[in-house]
Image (cartoon, rainbow, N blue to C red; front, side, top):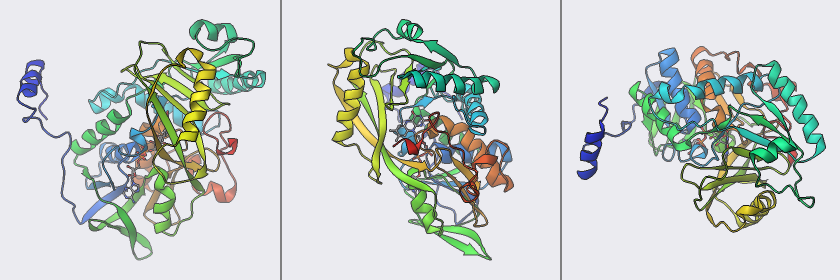
Length: 418
Ligand code: FAD
């Protein structure tokens, strides 16, 4: 596709951008594909891209009930890290980090990946001990990490509350220098554009309403735009996983909860890294526009409501002001919610299912944005070959039956913390 030079961009701006091409096609629905992916979030788009790129599959469609990137991929707080502890997660998230590091070049699209470092605060002496244990495991796996003393934290982020009366005293921190943020919607757009160029049909406003079967295996989907046949179907719908799997008669070990995020008015550079705490659950970074991007804990009850609510605004604002008193007079600009697919052990599912031809990518809890490249890579492998990649072998749906759980307690999103 033609790329534009600086002068051409000015000319297009003055001419109302009328000559610009769409970033991806708006294809009509074909009645048959080799692979259909349900869900046009980051994971669905990445899966389609790697199916075409790594496995040479030609006839692929992504079916999205709304618009591409309208789900969690465009709603998250954009933190990318690989400081996981449990065998399986450690290697998977490390591979994801490696893919992030080359992603803008891979997609020829700037996803604004910024490795600004993440400081995870220890607010109790016990947390320092548990961070030391986690850090040793990470080091054994070759993942960058440091244990910081209280003085080191204070030097890096002097504006936290270090007083004797601090509600959340700082005892130290775990630091990962390779962690950071990426522009979330650019990730969706980058994968969409790259998949489109490999011939993937990205079909928006196309809701999957049910499954079709033939000879004991899934053979297609019934959608708001008619029936579409495909021999292999991948479900990648994040917070709607339980609903879509139920259409195929599958009951998943997943609960859906709302997670909210908040952004303040823009200010001059203040928060250079990502700062996070595990207990209380809180995280803050600064966007390139200057807004402080803040997140807290899940809503404690099951819900499919994709919106924020005031009790959580009050709770997160209290946490923010307790940790960083200097931001207490900032105004909150916006808050919103996304629906989280909370698995029962805090680890994801990238797996075959008991139904032949049907594959599942779900259970991402708080942490699926950072997983986007590796989830797409390994889900594509699983769909293309019918077998797990070595990196997602442990993420099987069957583990909830056999009891081989991957309890990522404390290091990842842990539903049991609530
Ligand atoms: P989505 O973007 O939600 O994609 C799923 C798509 O499926 C949606 O577009 C939806 O419309 C579509 N769909 C649903 N049902 C159907 C149907 N029947 N037919 C067709 N399409 C359907 N993760 C991190 O790693 N770091 C973070 O800092 C972080 N912060 C977060 C903060 C918030 C507030 C939220 C909500 C999430 C956060 N996450 C974070 C989690 C992360 O955003 C998700 O785990 C990840 O984006 C999920 O994968 P996805 O992008 O494919 O999901």
